Length: 276
Ligand SMILES: CC(C)=CCC/C(C)=C/CC/C(C)=C/COP(=O)(O)OP(=O)(O)O
Image (tube, rainbow, N blue to C red; front, side, top):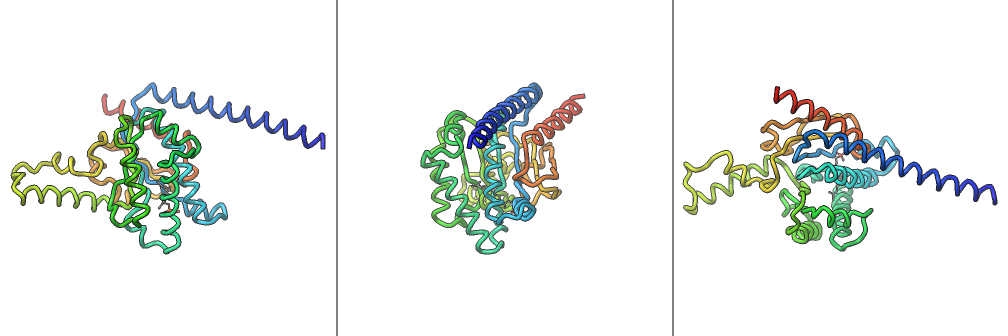
């Protein structure tokens, strides 16, 4: 009995010490990398949740849940690093071709997590974090493909955070870059056909101003986890403008601050080389 108690006290003390050590290390890493240029807008292809689940012998659903936790951590670090926009590929239009129960569980996860945020519940201090950083959350993509309840939750959080004047989190769900570009072109053609736009005034920047990311700063970095080296129809137009693309060999739920900092240092070296 006494022995157990002693072990509990010791492990509590060690946990606290460990947490403090981790916090301190994270703060130091963030302060160090912030001395150099930080990309204003980062896109993440959050890949590898299912392989993470398989490797760890857990259900696919739990892999996606671990992916959501990873998203929360990475978002927090990005905001502390003063990144102004984070765009995440949460669900591709093609993902609707996955097994029905996986699609349903991903939709449920999206709905529940967004519900927790909109209803002002504590999601590991996430609500506090949104308030503190005045974060705007937007869902972008072909929203009418979402089940009504999920779409409503997405629209609700976009509405609730629309007047926040801090950074923006763009959640691509369900998204394909080619759909985004064709939607922009269609909106421009509409203006031509109703006589509000002269075809001669169609420029690259006009098309760009009709993309879903039109109110985010220029994309400067894309990170894809899981070792895959493709863009998989993510931010193709935005990626054409001097964007550094980094492929990392870890699954999304395993992506750490240390990995992010390593990539940011590469980004800073590249910036310095471009200046020379
Ligand atoms: C509400 C919200 C924003 C939720 C985010 C949750 C999350 C991280 C979703 C990503 C889903 C997804 C298709 C990941 C890709 O890994 P994969 O499933 O393709 O894994 P694999 O590459 O190993 O097959």
